[in-house]
Structure formats: structure tokens, C-alpha cells
Amino acid sequence: MKRLINQTPTPGLRLALGILPFVLLLLVYLLASDARLAENPNDKLLPSFSQIGDAIQRMAFEPNRRTGEYQLWADTASSLTRLGLGVLLAASLGLILGLSTGALPMVSALTSPLLTVVSLIPPLAILPILFIVFGLGEPAKVALIALGITPFIARDLQRRTLEIPMEQLVKAQTLGANTSQIICRVLLPQLLPRLIDSVRLSLGAGWLFLIAAEAIAATDGLGYRIFLVRRYMSMDVILPYVAWITLLAFMIDAALAGLSRRLFPWQNKGGH
Image (cartoon, rainbow, N blue to C red):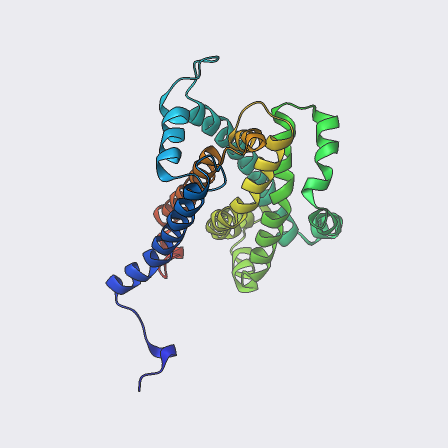
């Protein structure tokens, strides 16, 4: 008898198995929603699919009577702008810190202890400080995302830099390369693919910090909207927003993976 550990699903079976949990979750939700609404038609905890559809129609395809904006798209634009700026800043700082601390022992001795300490501070704990320093505007939200994920990216790139074989550095020096040439031509090309991977791994935390900041101090954004309507138990709005955030996160991750494969094909032969 073939052992379970040696059984590999065919592509078709793999697809079916991947879809099955989502179908089961939707079926369970549908049954639970029907049961609660049959008992209480005004129940808001598990809205029906028609109620969710009405909420999506209202938020995404009907202009707001007060502002004239299409609420879902306006919130999405605000959140993605904050997330994009925060991640871009974190990636830039993380690359600089990771490369310099991994390649330059003097810089490592100076900044590695501080980087380690900063990485241990819960980012949400310093959110009030950011609001005091930067105010309640956009800089504080972007700074929270950047401070929250920069240490992870920096330490990951530092480890990757230290993993690069010393023989490569010795050969470069033998050929007359100086420090800047070694960094730009030997280390940096090998770190850029890892940078994209680090950003992909840190996006979950980035979304967490974004939603937390928007929930506390914002007038628009996906996180703001979710925490605003929760006061009225508007699950017909909350559930589509959560699903939309999940879909956005998936699309961003897929886009970064595609970018990595396109720019650095030699690093992705095994696939990601």
C-alpha cells in the first residue's frame, strides 16, 4: 500500500483540494445565515448574500450623497497610498541597513545592537508617540508601517549578506575592486531578489499596522471604514471589506512574485 507521505495529487486534484475548503466555508456560512435569519429576520451578525450584495452595490457603485465619492474605491485608494509609501520607505531603509550592517563590520558594530533593540519594540506601542510627533495626519500612519517592518527587512537582508560566500569578495578584491564596487556589483545584485521576498513576507504586518492606524486616527481608508460601521454591527459592509483587503493582499503578493521572476529569473528557477 502506498504511504500517504508519498502520495502526490495531480494538478486537477490539487486545484480541487485547494478550492474545497472555501466551498465548505461558504456552505457553512450560508446554512448558519439562513438559520439565524429564519429565527430573526433583523439579525445583523450573519447577513445573507443578498444583503452583502446590496452593501457592495451601495459602497462600490453608488456615489456617497454627502461627498459624491464611491466609498469603496476612495477608501482603497487612501489605504493603498499609505501602505505603498510605508512599504517603499521600509524597503529603502531595510536595504541600506541590511547591506551596510552585513557588509561593513564597523557599521555593524555601531548599528546592529540598536537595530536589534528596535526590532523588539511592539510598533503599536509607539503609535501614540508617532501621533504626538507627526500629528494625526498621513506621516504618522506611514511612519508606523515603515517602523513596523523595516527591522524585519533589514535583519533578513543582513543575514543574506552574511551568507554570501567570502570567496566572491576575495575574488573581487583580487581583481582590484574597491568597497563601493564590491557592494554595487557583487552584493547588491544578490540582495535585490531577497529584498522583494522580504517585502512579500512583511506585507501581512504592514496591513496590520495600516488598519490599526486608520482605526485610531483617520477619516477614510479600509481600516477606518471597518471600525466605523462596527458601531452599527454592519456585518454586510465589514465582511466585503475584509474579503477585499484579503484579495488586495493576494494581488500585491502575486504582483511582487511576478516582478521578481521577471527581473531576477536566475533566482527563481525553483519557483516561489
